[in-house]
Length: 418
Image (cartoon, rainbow, N blue to C red; front, side, top):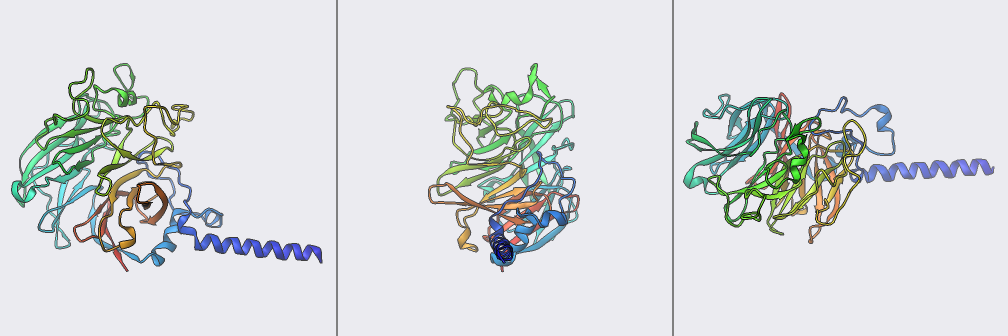
């Protein structure tokens, strides 16, 4: 009788735990093995995994979509590795494809003919045509900005180009900024652009790549701590590519005046928070150690001397997780999500989401809603399953969230209230 009572009690507890896990599944983060932007060998959860105590991202989001008051709508298909999007004042959307094409979506229809006048790009590895951004005064000056990898696999760098868009083609395109050092390989170009309220722009530049890539006789990633280099930095520029006179390192010895913050690995999410007047970034770690950071001018974010990442080949990159003089991340993702695309939601279509961050995940194939309190502290995270690699996340002029998937047949998706 005692054994039966114990067995009944155990069965009741197990059943209760399973129900709690199901009802709270959206708060449980699943396991995903990730690297910078590599596709996982198998993204579908196995039968055995679905029975485990920890829910996979797919399980979490399949439950959450039905209960969180939103639905996913496909706006366009047939995009080849789309990377970035930007809206024009008339409601049309410009979309970059990594291979070197610029597309336009008008009234929900993707024009089959690419926009002419795009610069020649190095489309290899993580490089190609990346960010698209329009000038804050586009209605007056028609200026469009692009970031792209330029050169060969043996000698390349990130460039920023500016052109005039006449509705059909880019005109008078010219490079207005390029990274100070030529590198080899096709990794870590960074490339997000963010306009600040004062009319200057921030541009994220990656650290150049993983070992064994070297520069100046040392691993190239060490350039992230070299203030004379643009690698592993956020730079701040005027709209013509010149350096603002109030940049934090202007006039400082052994520092490039364009540098705004440093110690970054590879930022692919960059967003302005109008509430705090601050900058949020997501950046790729190596093996684990992806980060969400809150960035201000002149700050050092530690890479690679302070990091939660491990070497891809195993072992420590650094034994330091924190150090005086460097800024600790707000969130560390291990296993990695491979974050790309970031938005601070300020619309009124999802009132409960206002002020929250939305970060795309390439490997986890989701968008993470990051709940912030009034002081900007992270209170929790909630994955929204997309089922494809997420390259970009933006809030549209209509107050809805738009998502680009990084696939050979990529999609433009929209999250709408259900």
